Amino acid sequence: KKKVLNLVYPCYICCSSHNNNEYVAYGVAARAINHVREAHGYYLPSRRRGIRRPKNDRYDYQSNMKMHWDEQHYACTSCWYHADSLDRFIEHVKTRHTPSKYEDGQVDDQAGEDD
Image (tube, rainbow, N blue to C red; front, side):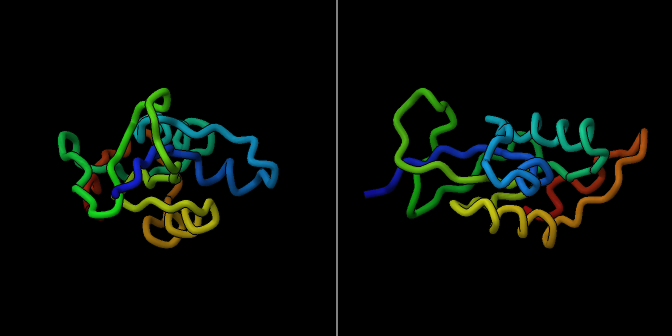
């Protein structure tokens, strides 16, 4: 039987500086991307719009936190990666997407690059 997975999108910067897990995790990727840009000044690419998460043999995905789910994972805003470990999530974002300082007017020309 597949597990029902709820995905949250934490800020990789805020959650890496808090050992007590008092950080905000967003329900949608766009809000986490905006937070990283506005609060920390870093640019993260987004996935292509309109493309649904690929089916998975191990999990069904539930985006509504009020509905039943078995596990919660930390999801990447820039690709389909997710993990149950916050440390693995942070390492993934830093090494796979190498966030850069945001410059005003920067265009999201890397969207979907890591799909």
